Image (cartoon, rainbow, N blue to C red):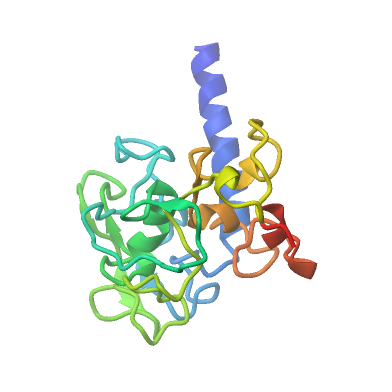
Length: 220
């Protein structure tokens, strides 16, 4: 019982920390005050739009609760100056973001609804950034779409041996640039963005003053 109690307490603390970071940002879709352009009427839970404590997506590494279309086709970034290899489509560190931001899946399309209802949609869409089905529209500044040619490249297998203008990996996940890489090897959306914390605006993982974040990987 003591072990079980400790585990439950730990989950409660983690939940509190996560909500404390998200609840005042536009990723709090339960609040029209926090997210005036994309919110859902009749909801009160903050974390449920991305995470489920129980019955989460088994393929997710973060107790994922939002539908992800792994078969979605994207037009990837391309450039004759990019020397590193790129995958044919984004990996997990980008798919979790694109599952809302590409506009193909409703923001409230969840694998596991709170309570016994099962999979489906949660709440009624509100705000100018969503259509009637709960999908982000091109009118929203958060809309990325499926054409990624005008965005920072993702699905990049980071290998500084192929380009001397990048810092070499250290083999230590607590040091740069390794610290920023998704799954320890890829440049993905989560390399630069933390959806739980908007301290540095645009949900950046750290300050980009003086291009500091860019220079964690790029050599000036």
